[in-house]
Image 1 (cartoon, protein in one colour):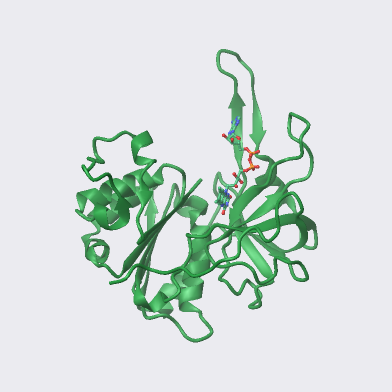
Image 2 (image 1 turned 90 degrees about the horizontal axis):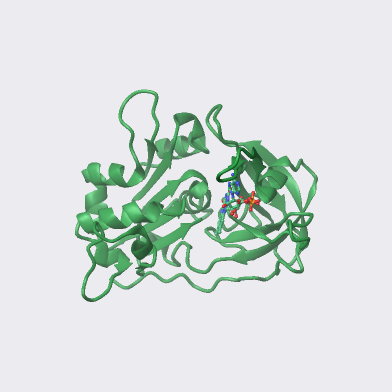
Length: 311
Ligand SMILES: Cc1cc2nc3c(=O)[nH]c(=O)nc-3n(C[C@H](O)[C@H](O)[C@H](O)COP(=O)(O)OP(=O)(O)OC[C@H]3O[C@@H](n4cnc5c(N)ncnc54)[C@H](O)[C@@H]3O)c2cc1C
């Protein structure tokens, strides 16, 4: 079977130093229930700008928050994964969207009693914006975390943690709600979150899985009220059917998106299942992933059938 092709993509049509003005057309909470986290689905209208029609599902766009950093320099661009299909939220590629989590933390200085609330600059700015507000945007970014040009030639395992779900909302939507008809590919989406209330777009994914027999939605909760803690890699190892069969099949493409470091567990499970060579570029002399430390594993590059985006 030939390797997947991804075709040409447009990149950096609008640079962060010369951003264009988009307008917020939607900002709604997208989690299942109350939680310690706050995540919003945010849609931005870029029609009339050079960005319109340039994005593909899986790419990211930039947001430039107003103001300056502690060095008196303008804030740097932050990237956000696109959570819409290639045709956008509006069907014309003019409304781009993302799944933005507010960064909220406690700052505490080592060896001192200093402590205060730390709020991330851009995520909170973006989540505070209201319908009609202007926002400076750039993009698109990313040339490999994409659906292949022949989507029906492949089956899909999408693995997300947290807001890593964003590009998969776009990709699953693109595969199943395509204007030319739904894809017949076997599609599995695995999402890992701490609590059941943290699940994002849950009703939408459940509805899709009820309407499409080839789409399977797997939720993995790491801090359940009752029962065992479970992580995405552990879930895939323990759920032999379908994952062992799927991962051994050369039609399968594996996509990983979410928290930096999540790829480590997945790479280890690929080796446990004896398929690491199909998804990863390993050194010729081989590498025992179970023994290698995280810094070594993080330097391993994905091969043609594996797409990784972690942040
Ligand atoms: C390709 C890509 C796609 C992405 N997609 C998404 C997405 O879809 N959704 C999403 O929500 N995010 C996404 N991100 C992350 C996003 O770009 C931002 O990094 C995130 O929103 C935080 O930005 P911020 O400006 O709010 O935080 P910042 O103000 O930039 O703060 C973050 C920094 O603060 C540090 N920090 C954290 N806690 C503390 C603390 N207590 N005290 C001191 N320092 C601290 C962190 O180490 C980090 O350096 C993506 C990133 C990349 C690279």
